[in-house]
Amino acid sequence: MPLPQRTDERDQREEPERFFDSPSAEALARDVDEPVVWFGDVHLAYDRPILKGVSFTLRPGTTKIVLGGSGSGKTTILRLILGLLKPDAGTIIVDGTSVAPLSEEELRDVRLKIGMVFQEGALFDSLTVGENVGYRLIEDGQLGEEEIEERVREMLGFVGLATHYDKMPSDLSGGQKRRVAFARALVARPQIMLYDEPTTGLDPITATTITDLICKVRDLDGVSSILVTHQLRDAYNVARTFMLKKDDEYVTSVVEDMSTLEGTEFMMLREGAVVFEGSPHDLQTSTDPYIREFLS
Amino acid sequence: MIAESRTLAYLVSLVRRLRERFLQSVLSVQDYVLLSWRGLGAIVTPPRYTREIVAQMDSLGVGSLSIVILTGMFTGMVLTLQSAASLDAFGARPYVGRLVCVSMVRELGPVLTALMVTGRVGSGMAAELGSMVVTQQIDALRVLGSDPVRKLVAPRLLAGITMVPILTVISDTLGIFGGSLIGIFNLKLSWEFFWRSVGNALTINDLVMGLAKPVVFGFILSSVGCHMGLRTTGGTQGVGLSTTRSVVVASVLILSSDFFMTKVLLLLFPVT
Image (cartoon, rainbow over the protein chains, first blue to last red):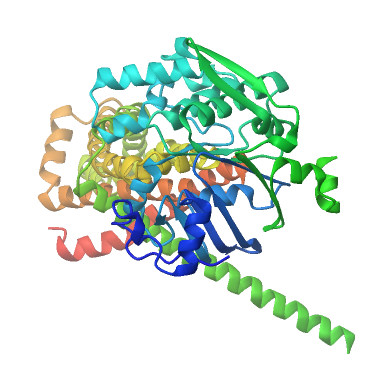
């Protein structure tokens, strides 16, 4: 995959045509309709290699589901997108900005566009649910207290926890914590959502409430997302569930025939390398022995 | 031949391990210096988290009052008893107040207060920040646009630097007061005599030494607590390790820096 050459990080949002300067990269840009996240041959190693030349593209409004066993480097991809880790080699572009060379201060602007749901929620123990959800808005200091409270209550309502505003995270169940984390990630209306194993450790019914939320955000707000998971059932649920809002009510439709699905791509990692990338149908019909074993 | 090659292999692995450990230590010291530097920078430059600063001052200062009062008081009392026993041998019992107050202000007050606060608060800082690391709350802070050094480290450093000297003054006062109680009820000295000898003994140099040390100790205990907490790896077990390490490292640093500071301060402010 050719690397897109960036000319000017700061200006490219105002002047998107300057983003790509080589003909091959321009062709790529047309092809992928300006990727929101672009990984080009990313390598990372600590004591052992974590990622070995990972490349992929996330197109606007689509969902990429990253599958893989423990230690395959799934979560590392999300940490790299957020700039929490720096790659040893390769390029990571998030909404037109190369994140690897940015300082912590410069990364703030990029992180504002991203909402992240951590594995166990990662709620701040010392703050109430309301303060947790409104954290980013309080830090920004641009909105007044009343506006922030209104937005937070709206978000908590969206995840079905409107009555939990004053509770402490320790009073919540595992599923409720993930939903609050969801609301916290959504409160600044991000363009990209990252989910790090959001259903791990939850019972199937609670897990479905989480996958429904992922679908809601994708279908109603057009947010692009990357879902990292090893729960195949939840991954399929996200791929084939679609949400509509009709007269203030959410209508769910489930597509049974996987071959017609669009907007969701699967990617499978094995020991830091991409071993599969394709549609849900491609995944189901793959003959690769590792993938077959993973799916069984 | 086989035995020789085994010995060689063992030596090679030993050298490798020692090198690894040495490099880890250098890295840790480098991280510590960087964190402290950034922490101090965050104290003197805006934005500051006033709510966090007040909360830390309350937790470190007000929260440690009871143990500091008890420690100071009992130290002063036992010091008076022990000193009196030794001074009696030279018939110098009336000097006990002088000895107790100078020892408390110059040495025991600052060191014991710092060690007690390290045990109570330094370990708590390491545990709190350590569990924030393992539950990804530090990552969440960064993702949500906060600088963990500004939000977590700077308020703790400021609380340590300001509150430990105040606690030391309280400990010194209570120590001398405890000593005076023993002087009156046990050693048959008069209240007035004891306190007059305290007043005569203390000089401005003693106060400088007694107040310069706790500022440094406060910095050490909070910076080591934060450093150990933020370097936590390996889940809840790692949190326990960080907590223990923070207390051990901070205590050793406090005691060793006390020696060097005393040496320097004695040169700058000699005993008159």
